[in-house]
Length: 120
Image (cartoon, rainbow, N blue to C red; front, side, top):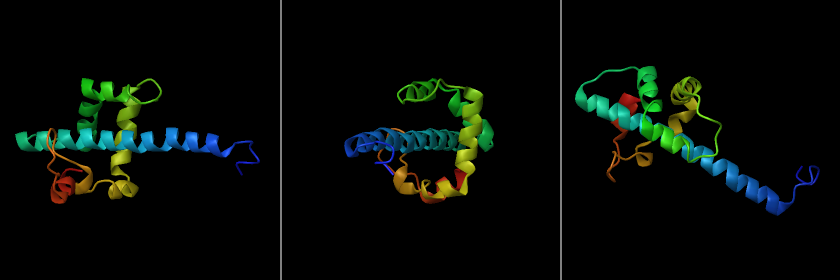
């Protein structure tokens, strides 16, 4: 298929290296920021639903700074809120929401799976 499109092996490798890793990295950062906010709210006894939490995260300056480090389209906050809310709820993402993937903010201590399941 690559030959039919005139794409050489080196070009294909460069494309894969540029496109795939950053998408997963960006997704995991989004999930991390979301979980950190949920943990923070949980500690303070603040109860918000997923959409409210995602909106809060997307409006944080930290989110914008991180967004700008990736080769993405200009930030549309309303679209981002909708997309991230749907992504978090998607059953296929359950494999990503594992304790080994998430640490408490500013530490190297994993967030327990039971807490991730509760807060997701």
